[in-house]
Length: 126
Image (tube, rainbow, N blue to C red; front, side):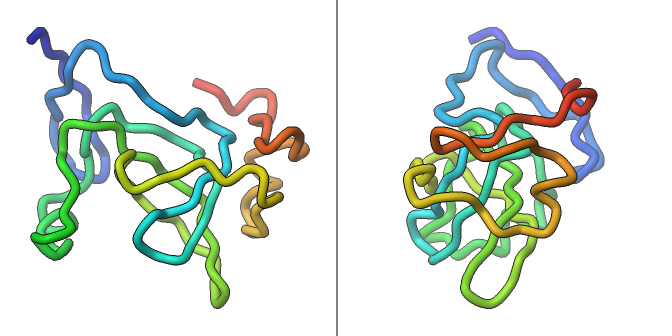
């Protein structure tokens, strides 16, 4: 399989990734984590796992997701707080029908919530 490299600031190193990956979600989509009770809006996507080894090893082995899949950066919320989450594709489901996300940074990055998703503010796309 042909692979490419990209630099991951979180991991502090080059990451190898397949030339083609299939991201199920897009920036602005509202999603829910399958195992834990939180939801969020996607604001960035890594084609494969690109966080630190320490972060990866902190996940219990029996629920640790595969590295070779898209990972999503989320503006996340649960009943108690708002935070940034990093979640594998296998652990997410679409949740736009449940309404907007109440994270304090949502309006800094996104415009209005419409049809189950947010639109990225102009000038923020790379």
